[in-house]
Amino acid sequence: MNQSVLEQKKQVVNEITEKLRNAKSVVLVEYKGLSVEKATQLRNKYREAGVEYKVYKNTLMRFAFEELGYKDITANLEGPNAIAISQTDEISAAKVTNEFAKTSNDTIVIKAGIADGKVMNADEVKALASVPPREILLGQLAGVLQGNIRNLAYMLDQISKKNEEVA
Image (cartoon, rainbow, N blue to C red; front, top):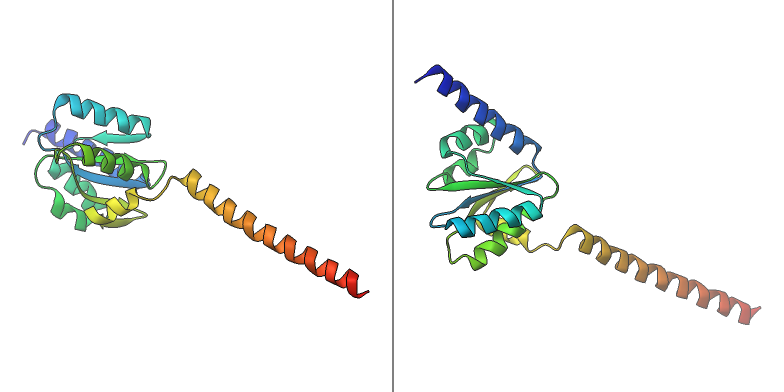
């Protein structure tokens, strides 16, 4: 093999490794039969969500996954694959991929993923995609806390009124 070609492949493996190392989440997808138009739509949806979508050779992805200790995911590296990488949150890559997969007539298939340093199967990635966005979760938490604080204030008010009646 030509030395310059080997160096280029090593650089690509290093690039993939760095992206994976810094990622909050990764989704491995198979894109068999995806038309150029649909691929462009998918890339645009990923871009809007702040997710990087890239097609690499399976062998190069295998080297990167193995270098980081994600050997379990390498069993899924057959056929035409790409990875969606989110550097900002754990959910967006899974959510965009899952929503697009539902409407793509099986031209894009979720194979596996990584979140929080844990390799996930396709079902776990789909479950992750159903988690509401961070803002909604924070809003729900604030609502729960507000309700508890309101109840506490009401109880303290009732206790003070009862103590006034007794005195």
